[in-house]
Amino acid sequence: MTARIWTGLGTVLLLAACAVGPDYTRPESPAPPLWTEPIENGLSAAPANAELLAQWWTTLGDAQLTELVRRALAGNLDVQAAQARVREARARRVIARAGFFPRLEAGASASRADASDGLRNDSSNVGGSAGANDLYTAGLDASWEIDVFGGQRREFEAATAELERSVSDLRDVLVIVAAETALGYVDVRSFQARLAIAEANLVAQEETVSLVDWRVQAGLATELELERARSNAAQTRAQIPALRTSLEQARHGLAVLVGAAPGALATELAEPRPIPRTPLEVAVGVPAQALGQRPDVRRAEAELHAQTARVGVATARAYPSLTALGSIGLEALTPGGLFDAGASTWRLAGNTAWVVFDAGAIRGGIEAEDALREQALAAFRASVLNALEEVEGALVAYAQEQDRLRVLEGGAQSASRAVELAQVQYGAGLVDFEIVLDSQRSLYVLQEQVAVSERDVTGNLIRLYKALGGGWTPGASG
Image 1: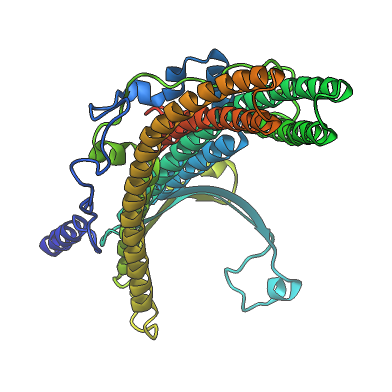
Image 2: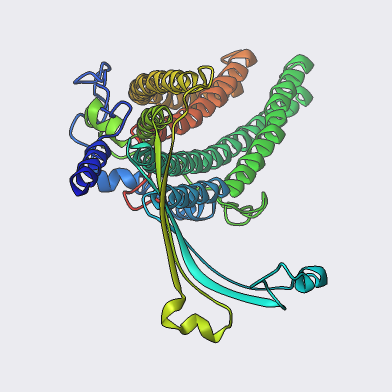
């Protein structure tokens, strides 16, 4: 008999060493060895510095921007929600781990029972109860579902992967919030610059109106020229309310990003400042490094790992379950009797259950979880391709916008000189007033485009850092 017990126990332990369902293996990444877009205009294929990438906004050299990003990462409500999801995932992992251990319950009871008068007076009730009976019990009950086929281990594996998915989700939120805060700040500075350009051009154009008005009164110009000068100034004046509206909306959006009310940053951001300039060199590394840094790719892989484990959970339901039961306790007719040596009781039991017919429900559950695993695999591959596309797009946008900015800056300088020459020559009667109007319009348009391009250069660098997964540190796990 003893040999049979040990043989059975050995069989159980051997089975327990295995877990049903597929084991997770990391899928191959389709990342190429090098970027497709040329690395130029300050970009470098050198490995990105992890510490610098974690706080890339400091490379823009703007202390106010650095402070706003710090406040956003601490106070943004989406960040706080993601941190709460990490704590939830940790708690669920603790719940899954608890399945490996026995469950103990302590209990105590006291009862009194009294027989009826008829039963008490019945002469056939020999040895029966003649009065009230008391019964006092106390003890521990234990139950333990033995993880023979690894279902609980797969549950724990899935919970661990879910925790990693939640951590990656938090990191992704940090990346997005940092980038959106920086982009919002750049928008504020850009609208301030564009508003200053419009106001300066309006002053110059109103001076032209005064000049033409004087010339009309002197008989040197026509009413047509005066009305055209007024029309030109009105067009510029009409841009100012729209720019002020956009500036206030940018301030409000930035305030919400840092977790404050919409108008909270109005005073803080009232004074115009230059658009942050980009560093001379930006190390972008290689595709494999970027994919390893990006939280959304990590999150997709964690979800694939969790779903692979859930296939094992569903598969384990097709096998028998084994539960061990036991209890120890005390039982007596009086409270003091619980402490007597003979008051102890115990019980050991075991049961097994096996679904022998469910009309295909378990098999359907396995197939459903496996289909979800295939969906997770496809989502992981899509996240890799989307990441590569985003980085490649940011690389070309950053490099090409710098070329565009240099051309616009040269054009704006020429336009400024053209306005000066046109005004002098018009005053001397050497050119038609149409030349003055055209030169003023060109100057305003080019100065506006320079301000927008400066915004886009810095904004494209921010998007590049975001595409590279910059903005989180390994300790940022909620």
